[in-house]
Image (cartoon, rainbow, N blue to C red; front, top):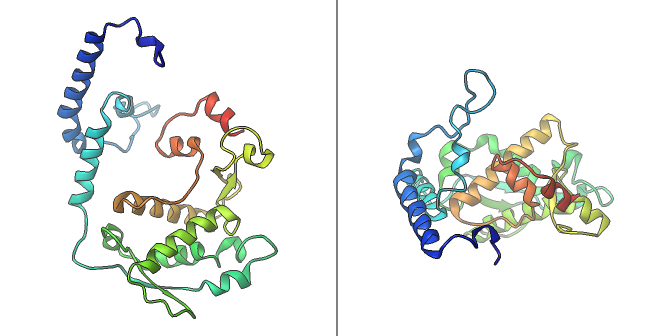
Length: 244
């Protein structure tokens, strides 16, 4: 039995526990907006005043997702077909890339870097669109963006994050040594600490949020420990050994 800790528990007991978990989720998940999810510290400054994360393994996934989707749908902006028009120069990416290295200083000439520099002109409402958060005009290319250019720009940014054109991600140690698990995955680069890099990380967060809100996954092979850290979960020795 895969879950050997359960093998001594009668089937009827397991069934009743599962029904109870579903019932708790049905009661609690609709009330999630009433709770503080930002993790404010308690009076001693030691940790969150309410251990909301302790419910992570108790609440049923369907209930959490339904509550999340309800919030996303309620905050969608639907009065326009697309966001601002942005110009991206893919030709300069090839010209500015040093020998197998970054596209310009700190990768700022990459499509990702260009988009990052333009995000300051976006209004908050633009990021709440259900699709096509921006409309793309590729400089020197006869591309009329009816949706394909937007998708293509996101695909290119994901590729740049993983092919060395930008400095934010590095391959896992297992990937460098070509041994063990997660050889095709990436970690956040601890050496990227400048203000330019921080702006790029913020834009990467924007990309992740756009993907979540629009339901369009990003083609990013991030190692599992990265996702756990983004979710505020503690890493274990097993997490580190799988990537080191």
